[in-house]
Length: 200
Image 1 (cartoon, rainbow, N blue to C red):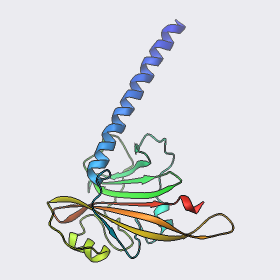
Image 2: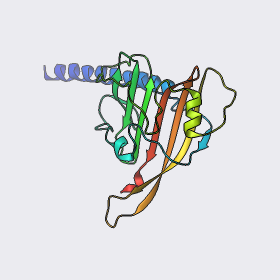
Image 3: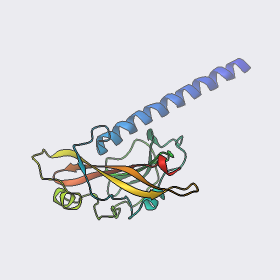
């Protein structure tokens, strides 16, 4: 009887594990297609950084997710933090200590239950949001208008000045990359990634 129970529980555990793996794979594909995470566009250097949400690294850090082993895991180090079913917007963040990143993107309903939130008012510190125009992106971040299709990605890099947490405190420069997805001349995704390993 004990062996039977072990076999049954083992089968159930394997089934649950397989189902979770399938959800993660679907979620990873869903996230990558919406944000162009694996296919960023040509890189343009910016004079100053931007943040999402708010105006500082601290405001970005405040919405980072919890444990990286949470079932909302997308693809390392990303987790799905919230979804706005009314406006069809997703919010993903990272919890890894070497990375402070936030992604806001338009997408269909995700393949799992996640916290619901109104994400329609989320903006970067410099005023960009979902549905900002391509012209607004160029005006805010720089770069030159180029021939493109209805759907394309563009990327920007900048440096973020920060102070280390350890004593003695030091001023450090952290690299930032921003990827913008444009659909029909309007922003459909904003991904901001800042490498923060030098802060410790």
